Image (cartoon, rainbow over all chains, first blue to last red):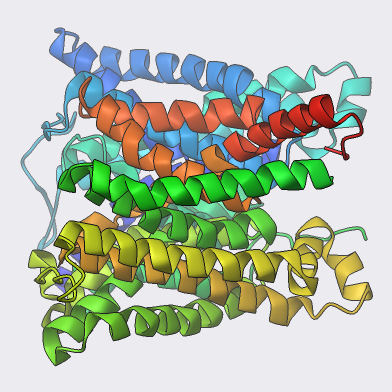
Length: 293
Length: 324
């Protein structure tokens, strides 16, 4: 039972990270109909920037928030410079441009920081926390807390601020929004910026666990895809919930199903994606895509 | 039209003549590099049939390359089958696997198919390591390189070169005929307007999964050839970056173009080698930049741009040229 509880909590911690990244994917998908294959690498690059700042002597939290600001601006610039020219191009073009972005960010990080793994600090104490008879990792609990804070922040932002409302309007009905005086192009760019920010949080939370290296987000991105697919690419809340489900299932399957263990973890994600896409392509909470013929 | 066709034919003949002369002029190592180019070209034609002509985006064709390579390696290693037989066998296995993967893929449109195949590409090395008994785990399988048949007087490098060239020519002729005829028009029609194609009586479901199968078979044959040529297979060589390399190849060479496969193969074989001198990361940075720049400026790749030039030449020399 104790092992079960521990696995569930650490599943929730990684699940929260998958959920954040999935949320970033869904935000971009809703605003621009693009699945951003470079989301993981953008998060990885932001984490390297945080590492640079911390190594330059900045305390953790100032470095954390400075990284968020840089990530936001970076995401905004990427949308303006790289994505905007192909906004209305066929899907194949957009997928290829995103893959190009993925490759560039990955190799740039390798070029600047080398491919050697680096330790990344956790802001939470190392001593585990004991509740009753069960022992939890402090970083796991902290990561869950940070994820929750991000979610609440985003909820409030999209629900109660003018800018958030304008962004939702721009995503839902671009031409009407434009007629109301909303600058749709900029709203999309801000969406990319916010997604990059959320991704940066995910990167900084996961780096202490998996260590910092240019390929660290590969596996996490596929889990984020699985989460977003499970929850539905059109549902932000679903993506987060999907992340938590995927995180917990991953941990429980890894612990209790012998023949899978940790060796086939990515294959589990692949199977989840395929099953959801074939059985219910819109996911648990998404709207089914309807096409006008 | 006829002028442009004549130019094209002359170029193909010249390229073939050059290809026959090359291994006698170049060193063994260079000849081996060109063998690799031919192997990539076959894989790229496979991916191009699916993504370029049929419009189904695959970011995981490295998986079929891996299946082809491992089919050959296992047949050679466990059952000592003659290698000439393992190559069509690898093609057949990939045809079936590709066809089966194509069935669920029918329900997936554009982005979702890209997603599923991307996940496949990421998972392949793990799956290969898992079936350790067959695949030798992360150590891979070491094979021995084939000798040239006695009496030809060729070095092993030259023999591999000519064998690969032979397979390439056969597969390209088959591919040209497949895409140039009724079937090819159906495949392209599905890409351009699936509903209209269906209304015209094209069985889209059957064609799409068959295209997936044929595409996988081409890529699988390429994988099999690479296993024979390199004489070694290991799971980590078939990672997601192999699939991205193939994507780079068709984008740079030219989407929906047969000769594009050759240009793309030359690009992915030689450009990383040159870039490697700058930094270990440079080849990938260059790949990424080429992907984006080509999409902006030359969406039809090298082959498409060459075609424009050829048409202009034909028009300039013959007066009445055909439509571009």
